[in-house]
Length: 208
Length: 208
Image 1 (cartoon, rainbow over the protein chains, first blue to last red):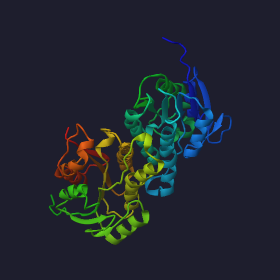
Image 2: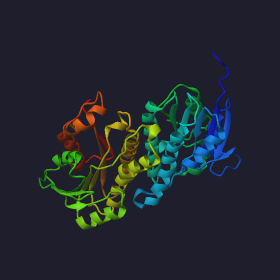
Image 3: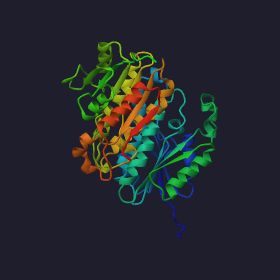
Image 4: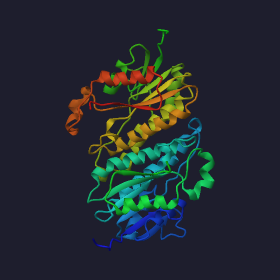
C-alpha cells in the first residue's frame, strides 16, 4: 500500500463548530478553507451562487475532495413558518449543497469525493425544525440516488450528525432526550467519507 | 359505528392518471376537483402560488381532506441538469406541496387530512430522475416530521407509488425491472390515508 495518500481537500465552512469537527478528520490532507465571509479562510464562497462556486473551483485549480459543513436553516413552528423562511432554508441547505456538487463535478479530480452535511432532525424530529428536517431528508436522498450517476469514479456521501458537544450549550435546551457527540467523532465520519471507497451513503453520527 | 362518514375532499390534479387513480378510492366522498388548467374541474389552482391556493380554499369553504396528485418534475442526467430545471422541480413537486399544507392547515376542518404524492424513484433510483427522487425524498421526510405538529387533529400522509399500469406505455421503457401497479391499488392507498387514522406515514404502493 502507498502511504502517500495525501489529497487536496476544499473545506467549506471551516470556521464553524462543524467545520472544525470536519477538520479534525482531515489532518493528513492539504486542506484549503473557504467560507461565506472568507475571514480566516483561504477563499470566500457563497454556495447559493453558481458563479461564486465556479470562481472558487477555478481559483483552487486541482482538488480531490470537497467537504461542506454549511447550510443555513430557519426555525419556526410549521403553522407560523413563512414562504420566505422556507425559501431561505431550501436555497442554502438544499440547493446550495446540490450546487456544490453540480458545479463541482465539472472541476474535481478523477475519483474525487463530495461530503455534504445534513443533520439528525430528519431522523429525530423536534419542534421548530421542519425546514431543517425536510432539507436534510432531501440531501440524504439526493446523495443516495445521485451516487449511481457520478462520472469519473467520483464518490458522494452525506454526514448526518446529532448536535456536537461543542454546541450543546446553545442547542441542548431545545433537544430534550438528545445526547451530543464529540466533534472528533464527526471528524471520523468525514474522514471515512473522504478516505474510504464508500459512496451513496448517509453517515449517521449519533449517541444512541 | 356511524355509516355517515362522507367527507368533502378537494382533489388537485383530478384529470391525470394519478388523479383518476386517487378518485377511484374516494367514491364514497363528495369530491371537489381542481387542476392547473381548470378544464373539466370545479376549480383552477396553481400550487406554486400561495395566493391561488388561498383563493381555492376560500372559494370551496368547508372541506375535510385535500388529496394532491400533481408535482411537475424535469428529467435529465445529473451532470446536464441546469439550475433552472432543479428550480422548476423544487418549486412544483416540493414547495408546491408544502404550500398546499402550509396554507391549507388554516382552512381545513378539524381532524382533516392532507394526502400528498411522491413516487418510487427516491427508493428505486433510475437515470434522469435525480430531481424527482430528491424532491420525493424531501416530501416523504416532510410528511414524517410535520405530522407531529399539525394542529386540531389534522393528519398528513404521502402516497409513494410506482408507475401506474395506465401510464406504463409511456414510462415502461425507461424503467427496466420495474412492474406497474393498477390505479385502483393506488386509489386504495389514498383511501387509507383519507379514511384511516394514520398520520406521518409514507404509503408505498409497489409491485415488489
